[in-house]
Length: 315
Image (cartoon, rainbow, N blue to C red; front, side, top):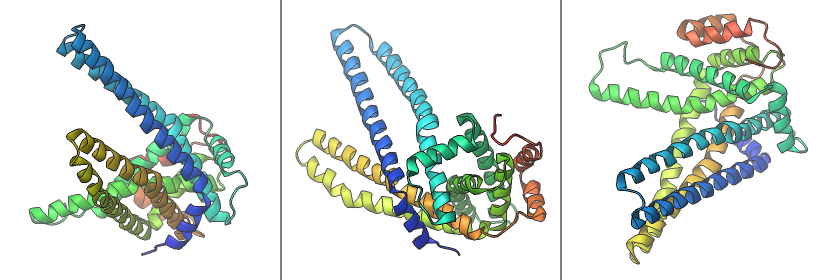
């Protein structure tokens, strides 16, 4: 199994400015979330105590507030968080392939996203299709529960492995997007297709190492949570309110480390592993046919690649 931890950690250190930006964006969204629901709760309690609204109207208002928040979150995730993540992927791919860090990596990453994907919707179109192909391919190569008569306990274990593979796939699609950034193909659909084929040729070391580090990431997050629980317990001796605040602080600290540091590091390891393992390989027609036989979404991706789309995707 290929574990390029040393190379990936070096790349991670070199792209720390993007990690800081992601931490800042995440912190800003977290603060905005607390303020938003704090204001909503204050207005709701004030109107209820004043008798201006009834309990049912308050519940409806709360549901509307939650709906507005979810809509705003999806918008932020699509046009802020994901674009920052895509720009980070572009810089990681550049560092892995060249060994050099762009002079202004934030500007470089932003420029790479604009160059390769004319619009944000184009980036999502490619990524969505890659995710669908990976899900079908990984399910086909990992699942064996339908081939044998297995005990219920073993079947549950296989389903658990399947869910772990699904989580791992969420990082592998980023590795294929990284391949799109460094590919010499003018057509990005073709670059995405070739990236999937290269994954099909190297799926064992890439998926195996990804599963290992994803499990390790969850272990680290759990260990950090357990280490911080005494903080909430000590505050609980003061009052229930302080205990609640303590749990919120503990949860926020763990979530910040998990999303701001662990996930970007795992992403860097997966991208580095994929690019190194597939370096020098050429997409093989036999592998493409095998993937097509397991995934009709790959057939869709291949048809887009064969359709002679422009250099920048405008679907």
